[in-house]
Amino acid sequence: GAGVSQTPSNKVTEKGKYVELRCDPISGHTALYWYRQSLGQGPEFLIYFQGTGAADDSGLPNDRFFAVRPEGSVSTLKIQRTERGDSAVYLCASSYSSGANVLTFGAGSRLTVL
Amino acid sequence: GENVEQHPSTLSVQEGDSAVIKCTYSDSASNYFPWYKQELGKRPQLIIDIRSNVGEKKDQRIAVTLNKTAKHFSLHITETQPEDSAVYFCAASKGAGNMLTFGGGTRLMVKP
Image 1 (spheres, rainbow over the protein chains, first blue to last red):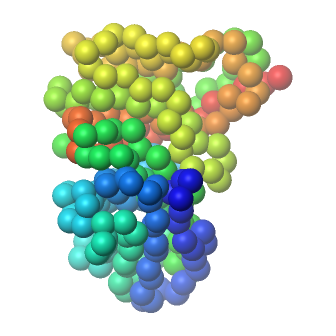
Image 2 (cartoon, each protein chain N blue to C red):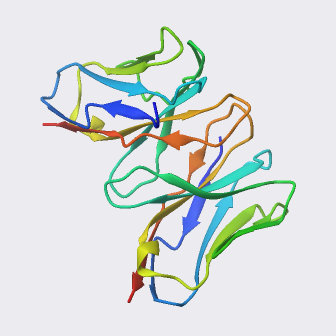
């Protein structure tokens, strides 16, 4: 596609529920990143994929968070047993390869946990 | 890990004036420093970046300077316009395949 696409754009859920957020990167981009942005703060790194494998998942806050990219394109961020503190905008970015640092961001998925 | 500090957190300038935003980083291995502009409710967009083999880069009204010894870099916007109003984020990375660490952001307001 023309840009990084994220769905849903907004998600409201109740504490304890399971949530999936989807990212469709720019066609041909092999590197994919997930970031979390809380209100008034800079994006915080969660996980980075090179192809199908997670090259760096050091930013995932705990084992309730998991992400997959089974075919090296679309990625899904999965959050189990959501907590109110998980409320944030989840940003996805992609780049042409792991050798390129120029990231193109999606518009984000705003998650609100009630 | 890397830590990026950004100042000021808010900056208000008159249209036509210059604006300067400063960032410091902690990891001397970092070698790539982009700046992103984020308008309200929109995605961050890259406006300029600099690599550690140069000290300054310019693109029209925007320039970035890098001091590797002091581990700080700055964004300079000249002849500011109301459409420059946004939140600006600096970031640092150790290069290819490494994630960006972002600063906390600067809300720039340009008054007409």
